[in-house]
Length: 267
Image (tube, rainbow, N blue to C red; front, side, top):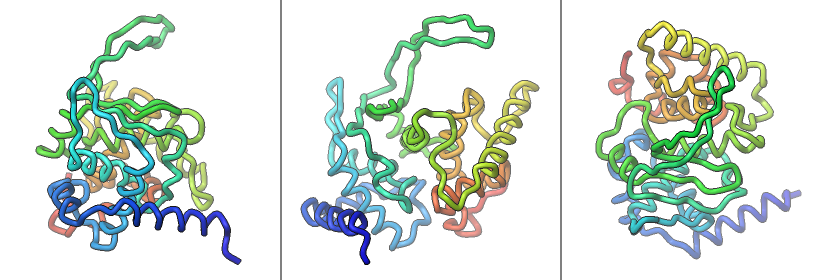
């Protein structure tokens, strides 16, 4: 018997793809040079293209402060946003509807508490932000900079959409909903050990491979790890092999295996 939900999802996807065709030329022009997509097979790129069509149909991308989003800009954002769910389901991005894109880094007002409980008000300049049931907010200048000059471990789009996956369990705590074949204990052990190691290095002013921003909280650690997983898999596998294995199981991808041997950098 065919699962009715599976049948409906398949029918919905085929209808979306048929009603919102994406010309191949526009697709290839948009993704040409996106570093984190290197190594994807023709089949994977075709599947990513389908994911992007569905994403752009289901989400609203709005430029603000005078930013006019071109089709190419929308495709470049969507392609990077859909890479983490390439082998997951589209419903991983359900429950919210909008991506807001600022021309440049944007300022937000945060209430923060330090280690001893003192509360202060701060204005923070951000490249991106993700709200629980609300939008993903991005800065186009930072996206464009990363597209032009990719850096290992840096991708603001992947970072913010990793937060969205993390929030599927109700709050951002570094624990996205794991697959049934993934023991929670293995995930917790691998990421907790790597998190403590990063904090230990920072406390002793030792330079590590992982961006120190990941030590801010378990939520930021997961988002930063996801950036490395897709943009510098060789670095993450070298520095945190157990973490790499857990992310490979969660995302159901192996970015390191996609790279030619001569591009699997050593650290």
